[in-house]
Image (cartoon, rainbow, N blue to C red; front, side, top):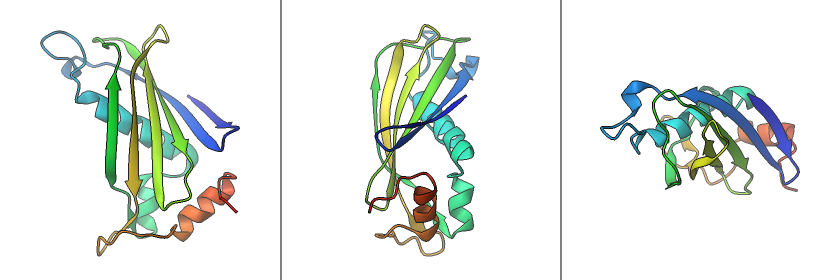
Length: 148
């Protein structure tokens, strides 16, 4: 697990998973829908490492649903392989959280890439926030990501 800050105002976290038997299809490769779960694994590991988890948002009265997702498959993963999920926070001025993902196999080859966009909604009413929530503004400030 690596934690790093990159020069272009992004944060990155790497997390490893082992492909389980129930994640492969009849062709003995990871079923395509499981890559969405791997992105989730990466996002949750990032959140724990950088204090930006779903529970952190919830305690401040917000939910952060995914409103956009893209994936591009490059190579298959197979049962038993250890894959590395690189989750990269992409800084934005808008009231949203954008992550980029790169999943690599044991040989360091990219097997899948993707991106997700999450927005802030009020937990009780469900209204989308057009402004940065204070807790998120503080988080960005703490990591040197707040725009002037």
